[in-house]
Length: 257
Image 1 (spheres, rainbow, N blue to C red):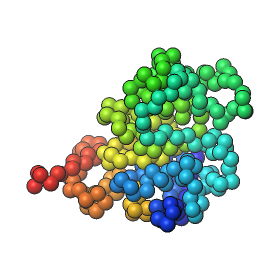
Image 2 (image 1 turned 180 degrees about the vertical axis):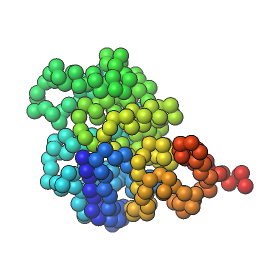
Image 3 (image 1 turned 90 degrees about the vertical axis):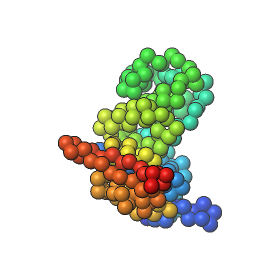
Image 4 (image 1 turned 45 degrees about the vertical axis):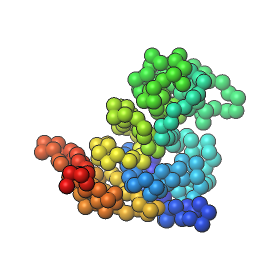
């Protein structure tokens, strides 16, 4: 699936939040959206997955304008895993995952054997096949977020949007979620605040600051010490492994000077 945005703008009242975002996501690409808090990266993704509506500009899915698609049609193309919160759903894990089948159903249509098979396959993909009868609200934050990912997978879309999905999770669960997503062979766009995670998992990065695209490229191309300082105001040192070329960003606090 391909997503294209052209000069996307968003005003909230008189304040311009997005100032003309041009963006392209190619099939099977994993693109990270980076930027400081309040830069507009999550707001931009909310426009893509239709929680917010742009004031101007176009968002295009596979050659069709998003505003020409029904919500059901766009839900069959794109699934979302949003920022983690501690949900209090009073449902079983399997019931939560089955919610992802709703775009495929007619009004009041009941889940069938195929729906249950798809849901259980999704739970197996995220490593929670033994959790289907557990009450969702009793799970840990990392387990809940994997269930939400499984729910997104039951939509069976070509594209997955991750809107800071690992926020508030400890490092074990951050890596768990990102490892699962990386192995899915889907088209992925993700808002990521941790630059090391962005460098580990993304094919390409798009940097947004103050509602404007200020840089794009591979992690190795974009994430230089100068760029990080200019965007975040933080000194850093970037190390590259000799054998693999993998990069690691070390931040240099003021008190080290």
